[in-house]
Length: 387
Image (cartoon, rainbow, N blue to C red; front, side, top):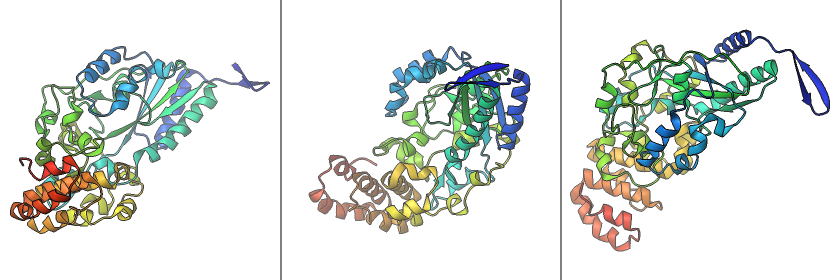
């Protein structure tokens, strides 16, 4: 039995045994749609500060400056919240119904990462996490905080410590039951809860995820250089796609699933139980022609509720135009030419690259007129850069 003060009134709460409480939380988590549940002590990963600092020193975070700015809190749960004693990690399966790599061979279509083909997972998971955290708080009288990729929390190594799976050589959490297809959420609590056993790394000698990477973004197993990662470049990177990565980008217009989809543990994966995480028909096989014609309003309408909306119309068109340049379809060249006068230099630059790839003679004839009026140096360089 435990007594807590709320305002000026003593309130008596009955605290169940830790094991009974955890059993109730597991049952409720499953009812809410979570597929994995595990607990790690807040001190479970003392190795994180050194690993994070090594990655930052190597510059692998690219222009995600927020990673460096929040490094101290990111590296230690107690630095983020000094009262935390236990962390509940939860996994939400988003396994696809079809092979996400199949579309890469259909160059007139745009490939959107599996996780972004429907609703934003933050919206789906956060409310469920809050409900589960509320149950924990009511039963224990302890403090709770909820995180879904919205704070400096290193969910993947903590999920490994909580027994949900292990970080594979592609740095993604791998589960024996769900392969590489788990969204992660965390509940920090001041309650002392019995921890689960950490999961041993089970990749063995397999290197499929490393071998398939189109840009060699893995300096070594279990290490990722974001600056070379197409998921980072197409989503987080705000500038032009570096020249060396444009052809490898293929028709990937948002994210990259190659290293996830090729993992052999996916043979045990299941299709997501959550309908809002299964692919919308209009986002599973969209044509580049359809996407290139979208204005800002059309973009916002098509991707309402999807993570894709967050990158904005300009970056989205940048990605689509790179895909058009890789399509080999001369009939799409006109869509690139239509964007040569775009207000956004990011779009103009990508349009030039696409046009030069598809119709080099036409691009050469247009170059003098456009160079004469172009004031942005990065766009001017697109007319003359080696392809």
